[in-house]
Length: 546
Image (cartoon, rainbow, N blue to C red; front, side, top):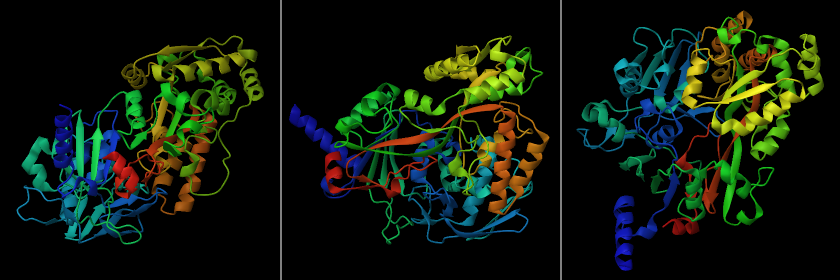
């Protein structure tokens, strides 16, 4: 029986992972997605599982480098008109879609018309694309996408929008062939045809996804070597994060993103380092993550829930900000994972100038008490309790905040609700104080500052913050083409908003990645994207995987 199991396992690996003569010649990279993968169509790459998978299969006009700067992908270069309304992209002529039965010819080159089709499809209501907002109310009303010839694409905007290139780097904006969409219809979600470093082989939903190296992929590394380096990608779908990490410890996975809260004290030291007993077994890689965790105040004081609410007083909102020892909170509640949220709403790593932060709140309980006294409530006397709505995942953090607020005389009541209920409460203005988080959609401070633009509804402006000065500067910022000047305006926006204190930033998150020894090229970036085309496996790691 044992021999039969070995034989079946070997045959499965051989036929699902390669077509070469010998199993030993193959590098097999294995990881897990704890959340469901719902589509391999770029138009629906709205969450981490979908965007991670799509990024291996497709390319767009541009992409981000390790420093989150825009660099070429299928577009080799581009021009932007002085008024910021016209973007002209000059495409590579050596990029092909992966071979598929939907094409009449064996090789199908990518042309500018393919991007016109892909972008129009993204905006087409019949597609119901999650990524429609990338172009919605931004591109020109009439023929915003034009193919001048096979290698020249022109995009016209209705208003200047300086972060436009950052939006184009999102997986939503990947190029797809019209033949595949027509051939497979709704099944295109499970029959992807792209240009990426890997090609689709098999997807058994909820079980396994297998990708193969794309021979002749157009990108090369700095030494002229063709990407990618690994031959096969094997993705599992185990939803339990503890089980996932156990499989990693048992060498069944090569990489794990993040760690279950129940295991953090076992694997990490109090200050967030890998415990000594694990250093010989695997590697911890960590870096900044463009995710901000914060508390939000409803700034629509006419809403019924704000009647007699202490949060209508700006001094109370500021006092809450000053009452929190964010360094201590991170150390004791998160094993020092993250950076204290003392520098405003935008993660400091997104600002391009070296200026120090002149806004935000540090731990200053004396100032908090002084502010309460200024508001007419010394020691919090006379103020009713404040209710904080949060989810079960953040109960421990909420309890810590409750203790800190009580230290300055503020009573906090914690109500734990289902995430779906919390979303409804926020949308319907039925909660005055609630937990929030924001992961940047693209690598520009505007992705955060849009949250407080008064003309935006909920989402993203769940606080209903509205300040005429802020709004006018916001419009100026997104139209500014000089990056230095735009950065200064961004900082002013952050400063103005923080002075009104519609939010309580808690911390700027970090990416944690665990890899087996011998794995290279998985250093985290601040967008927490997965770029498997750069992954190398030393011979020892590849042999262990097989």
